[in-house]
Length: 93
Image 1 (cartoon, rainbow, N blue to C red):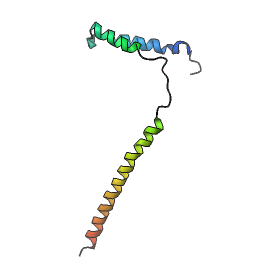
Image 2 (image 1 turned 45 degrees about the horizontal axis):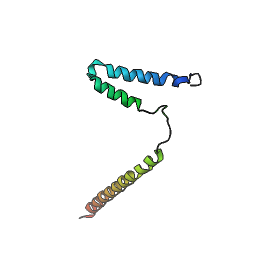
Image 3 (image 1 turned 90 degrees about the vertical axis):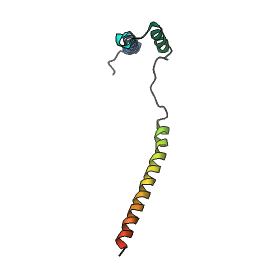
């Protein structure tokens, strides 16, 4: 990456605009001129430059622990009940 020319985003935004134009102009999509104008307007509203960074990563991971804890608790209860049933069956004459 140190060799990359970062001027103009290394052509990323130009390539993105070209790709969007190609997709909108594809005959297989059968878009009307109004639809194309709408999607071009949506594209113009996208804020640039794009930024990458942390977005609630740990919050999402920690919130997943609630479900994991519940699942582990449920598995433990099922295993305990299964073992109790097997123990009672073995002790029966």
